[in-house]
Length: 213
Image (cartoon, rainbow, N blue to C red; front, side, top):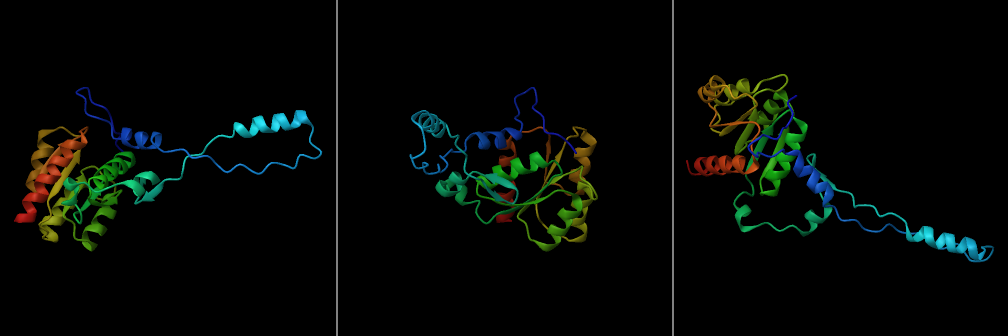
């Protein structure tokens, strides 16, 4: 399994998104049990009891899990769909990637933009979802267990005859790999590491192009 790294030119590590969400959770005090009746309690014991009650730690509210994407409860309650993201609603993206942190982080990022995101952790799972669901766009990692990304691209275009646009992700910067993916039918090629806005720009371009074609 590949790991997500930070490049020297400032491209970010997607694990920062999850870490930031963990830090932003709002704490709320837990319920403190009622005081014990004062009889049979000496003044010294009462003072110690009051001091301990005042130092009870707080506990963060539980998060809501949606398709393995951690979304803080306060965001779900108070979030509003921006005008920019309204156009993304109902657009369904398949994200096939065996890197767990990268998959979760990007799924969260895309969901926050208004997209519906389905995840696949290996090539076999991706194929099953492709055969069962009509997606508006697919993001496919080339190096996955069981079935590789190239085989999936070939199946989508040659076997299933689907017009769905495909963005390829890979840790390889080899030009031959990029050329082969385009030959197989990929529409975009992105080398890791990369920044979320770069991915967003490619997604927006392809969805706009294929929605009008």
